[in-house]
Each structure stands twice: as structure tokens, then as C-alpha cells.
Image (tube, rainbow, N blue to C red; front, side, top):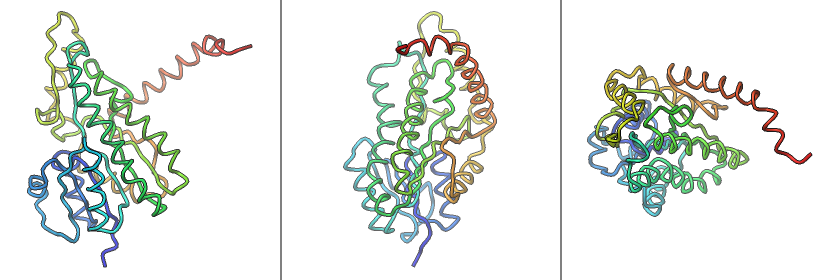
Length: 279
């Protein structure tokens, strides 16, 4: 009987998710992986092994579909040890010009789908008294760049959700990490993964310049996806994984600078902050 850990990975047909699934299967883990198209996912993974690999067609906007995929995983493997909420995409543009529907769409995928997957898997993990949830955020959720306001809002929401759910489920032996990468060579800046709204309003020079700089960096990002997924596997084997894990030198530098700025600002305005309470 195969007793290797069971991983459930969303958004697995490309990018970081696909790299992770391939690495896990190479290491002998059992993997349930989701995509909108199970056939495309199977072809991308390139492995037919019903004992260790379960490709699932899942509409992450449909809670019933998510629940069914969790049940299929339990039937196939008996348990779920690690969940990686990887599905998501980027969005750049000014908030004035991005449509309301586009904003709702990205929140549905980047935030609500993450919450719904966690909601679906928690009863199983509680009964197991164990489990590990990795939610893929972004350094942009902590230190945003011009033009990425809506995307940054989704990733900030993922980070906040992860922090609090970790407190909620700690007593059940369930651990949570939000991974917050900077730029990795995953196709994130390609048309398939990025919703780009052209900035036509006069001005907004910071937005336009930042967009051009980011798009020109596609394929040149310093982050190595293979090294990232190796770290994910290390996290899952760690008895005390971090709550937050920034990935990449750029993520570390940006987060460090913001933390220093926040600490300084907090102290600078301390007297104003504390003056708001009743005497």
C-alpha cells in the first residue's frame, strides 16, 4: 500500500503549479491536481499513473465542483495531507479603467476560490487531526507597484485570510503558510496569465512606466520555479513551517524596506494613535 503524502494542487496545468506537480510525482508523492481541462492537464504532466496521479477538471467558481474534487481525491487516495492553492492570475491597469466585472472575476479566482478550497478540505483535515495548507500570495500583496492595485488587493486578502485561518485551525494540528513570491519565470506575465487593461487616461505616468518595465521583464525574472517547488516540498516536511514566506531576493528586499518604513511611521505617529482612546 502506498503511504506517501497526498497533495491537492489547484491551477496545475501551467506555471508554478505544473512544475510542482511534476516534481512531486518524480519524488513518489500522490497528487490530485486541478485545471479547467483535465485532458490538457494530463498532457502537460505527461504521466499516466492512476495509483499516484489524479487529474481533475474543476470549476473553482463552483463550490459543488470543488467539493466533488475533494471527495474524488479521498476516494482515490484516502486522505489529503497538503493543499496548495495556486490557481490565480495577474491584473494591471488603473482602477478607473478596469471594469467592475473584471475586478469581481479576479477576486473570484484569486480569493474566493482559495477560501472555498480551504472550506471544503477542512472537515477532512480536522478528522485527520493533521494537514498543511499553502496559499500562494505575492509580495505585491504586501508591497504593491503602480498599476497593480486590484491584483495587490486580492493577494493582501489571501495573506490576511491565511493568517487568521491558521489561528482558527491550529488546535486541530493543521498548519498554514502563505507564500509570497516576487518575479518567477512561470509565464505569469504572458497573455494567458495576465489581464491587461490599457491606460488611456492622460497622466498616470507611474502606472504606464511600471507596466512597460514589468512586461519587458517577462522571461527574465530572477526567480527559479524549480527551486521554488523544492522549497514547497521542504515546507511540507517541516514540523514548524513559517506563517509567511517571501520568495526571492526582490521579495525579501521589498518586504524588509516596507517593514522598516512601517515601524518608523508607527513610532512617528504614536502620540496621535494612542490619543484616540478614552482617558
